[in-house]
Image (cartoon, rainbow, N blue to C red; front, side):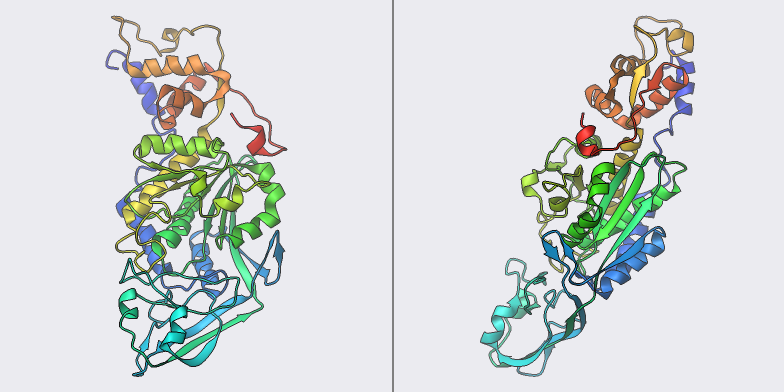
Length: 467
């Protein structure tokens, strides 16, 4: 573009139009996220209970709009019922020599989730069916639960299990299952429009870093970033709820509103390692969230792993179920179930989740949200090619070769037909949307582009505004 310095100067004035903060880095923001995950790590989260409340209150400290909601045990939500609240004070096994093992106080994965209270002596053969290990990962404590059927159990490394000797074992579980509440969190960050972007994550797993803590931490930092933006086109709804039942409960309370207002949605889970990027589509596979996720990952992580909705396993099962069909997609690092430490004590903040991994997922979701903010539909204001030279957008002298910025301008104008959104144009041109945003602003400023207004939605957005 050395042959057209005037255009270079104009583009530089629009260079920050997309809205990313270049001062955020993995060493800075990524490390701060990792520190928050470390603070949350020891809390005993489950489907219900004090650990969930503690977790949400810490996140509320970081994201003040977050409000906590308590739903009583016994509450019906579609085909499900909120169970009793589970409280654990202590649990352990005592072997024939009096040595205590599988101590809950040492690692909260040692006790099977929702184990009933028990204080009983039994021999090893009676105990074995209640012991859970991972022979393929002999040093790992597995994560096991029994939420909806009364049971009890302990989880220990297979190496320790193989060292158990015959004799009497004392089983001690100091816990209660009593009427209480399921707790979830919700933050509404208002924008210029009543149309919403939904971010959902879950807070129900004990000490596991990628499968649990990465999602709430990245979601919280996205919320902080959104709050700091001078203006937001969309309203943002951030939901923190226990996986599966929490999402079902939330939908049972807000389904009609969500179907009317949600334009795109993302489920944040397994977003903390730095091994891979992954994409899992909505049930329909062609929603605005899917288009945005594919666009962003295609440019920022072109080697990403693409999965099918048949390989779903998190809360997208609920948000994309028939009768709900919200436009939800997932942009993960390594997908749940696809890394060896998944659902074990090895999923930790040292070997799995890193500041760089958290920051990478944070940046990817920032790009997706900014793509949605900037994804408008434009039309050219002149018939045939406009006189770009008269507006300082074309070299006044030429040898038949123009620079790439001029080519982008002509291509953008050629596709701005009033029916094709900017995301589709960017895909057609093979360019990242964020590289076109400055050009759009410049062309609008020059009077060559006009936005096609879209009326505020009053019906199901995921049906009405499909491309």
